[in-house]
Every structure is written in C-alpha cells, then in structure tokens.
Amino acid sequence: MESAAETFGEATASARKSAKAAAKSAQKNLSTGTYKAAYGVSYGLVYATVFLTELLPENNILRRGFEEGAEAALEAASKKESPAKPAAKAKAKKKTSKA
Image (cartoon, rainbow, N blue to C red; front, side, top):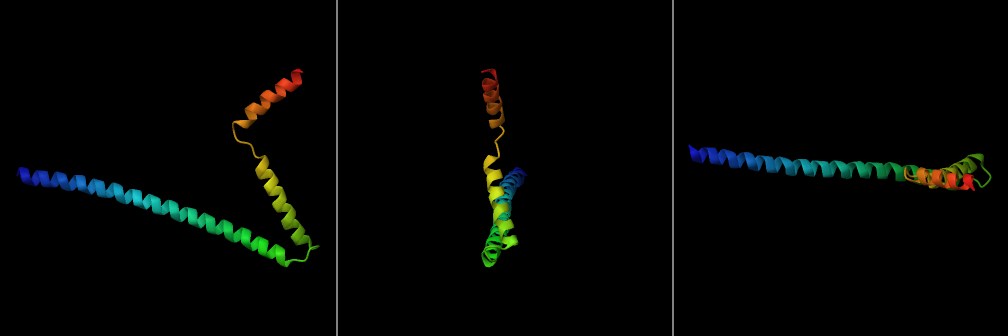
C-alpha cells in the first residue's frame, strides 16, 4: 500500500513539474508569436508607405502629406517625455521664475 502511495505522490510531483514546463513553454511561444506579429504589421505598414511615397512624383500632394506626416510623428515621438521628466521640468520653471 505504501508503494502505491509513494508512486502516486511521485506521479503527482512529476505531473506538476511537467505542467509548469508546458506553461512556461506556451508563454514563451505566445510572446514570440505576439512579437513577430507586431513586427510584421509594423514592417509591412512602413515599407508599403515608403514604397508608395517613392513611386509618387516629387510635387504630389499625397507624397508631401506622407513625408510631412512622418516628420511630425518623429518629432512628436522625440519630444515625448517620460514620467520622471515633468517633475524636473517643473522644478526648473520654478527656479527661472524666481530669478
């Protein structure tokens, strides 16, 4: 009877270990799949837009819109502040307003 209980206990421990390994593997595969999907969508959109822009004549209004929109987006992204920066900026404003 003890042998059966020990075997059952070992099987339970082994099953838990296998389930943890399977869950870890599934999470890794899901993360990898999500990354690759996001990468593919991003690459496809940017590549298609650049390709289309290069096909259009220099003075085309659609080309100018794509180019200026891309420049504005890059500028906005570079100006985007992290949560820590606004506090430092507020302190700098207080110092300059007191002077």
